[in-house]
Image (cartoon, rainbow, N blue to C red):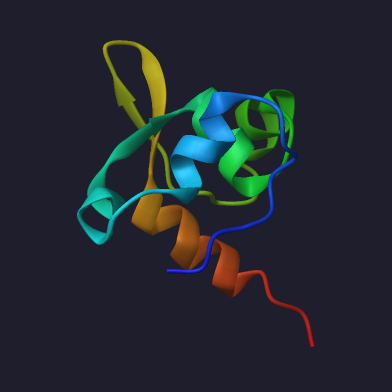
Amino acid sequence: MQAFPCSPGSGVEKELHNMSSEDVNRYLAMEEAAAYLNVSRRWVYRDSRRHRLPRYYFGGKLRFKLADLDVWAQQQKVS
């Protein structure tokens, strides 16, 4: 699994990059997904639907599966 660069600072970025292979099936909160993709929370909330970023709702909260984020990011590759 290739992690995307995140700006240093918060513990969220450090925690995400230290994940084991079992953690790829974990669901991330919007803030964690934004940090993982190195985009703003606003982008994740507003544009994830338009860009077909796989997302889930649990208890009224938006969640993202780490493995889905990796697959989606690879599909965004431009040559």
